[in-house]
Image (cartoon, rainbow, N blue to C red):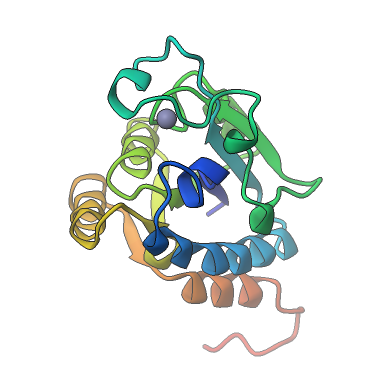
Length: 191
Ligand code: ZN
């Protein structure tokens, strides 16, 4: 298994801006810890965030948000990308749609997509749909995704599990797995 972590829409507008709310802030610290563990284990981290143009179809639905080139479309400071990370822009819900993500993941030998960010039932779901169609395995640490309401979050998680066969786990479990995978040779294997 070769995972990559995809960080979706952890942008100022989605956390503290016009589409932000208090409940989505719960994902910031778990994602920060997950990304630190991923980088330490050599697991690629890919940010894919909205960078909208005024003509994008979504603007009619949500109003202008995360417009390309603005402060609102930047990643929140707590999760600022590091030099080893990849940063892509998207213009609709899916992180795969015309972003180059699939080519990037395939060129890195990735077969498993760890989905984090916002929102469970919208962009995470559309990203999972496209990952599924491209035969990636899907992992969702449920404390690293969230939605506008608890009901939407719960429904979103259940949909990912049932329709895409996503493995629903936690950031803590993944961090432990990745730390163990880096354990030096000769250490106990637990067999
Ligand atoms: Zn958008």
